[in-house]
Image (cartoon, rainbow, N blue to C red):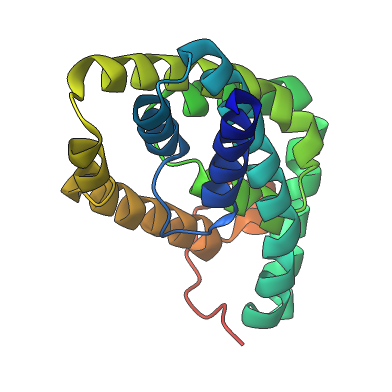
Length: 198
């Protein structure tokens, strides 16, 4: 029975990180299931973080499909150019991903940018796993300590913090899309181009 519950944790974490913007953070699902079923925290963290990483990887694979249909060809080429440049600086990208992930920020903008710019997301998964495990350990332990019953957790899934985080994440993605990256990297000039949609 416990094995099935840990599989449920894995599937739930994977599912919420497959969603582009409107899902709750994976750690809240982990806390909810851990508290609801009295599961051990460490196995919940391990299977939850792995599920989350697989969800984000799959998300980065399907997001270019939408960008190619929503964004102009020039913008897609711009994003692929930045992806090729970022792939050249692998250790810097790894350091950035690790730093970004340990901050309590939504990972959607990170994987949206990685997917659209065609960065090899398998290469950033190790840094994501490390950072995600660190931050989720903190959040799950804090949630376990603070939350006294499942009703309070369920109410926290749709909180103003999650809504603000979602809006901030969408704004970061839009800013990333509106920057003319080729001009920035080649000419060192920051230019915004809002005419990117088909």
